[in-house]
Image (cartoon, rainbow, N blue to C red; front, side, top):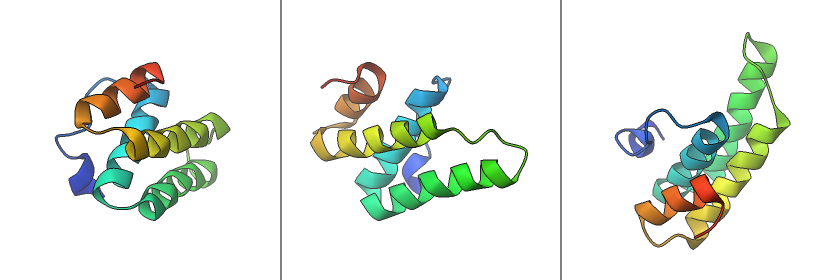
Length: 86
């Protein structure tokens, strides 16, 4: 999963867009199952640790998975996660 994100995740994204893009990239280059597990794992880690677990992060993760299913290119993934549209 780290390899899927390395050099592909744009820097300085707002939190919701970062969740969307991370899930989209993991879904595209690994699998939907791994993207789902990564999202839930991150929120569980936040819940049990010093982070801030948020339901909206999981919503953004699901949006990223939908983007990965419909986007034909990396640029379309970015567009989908930043605007909500292709």
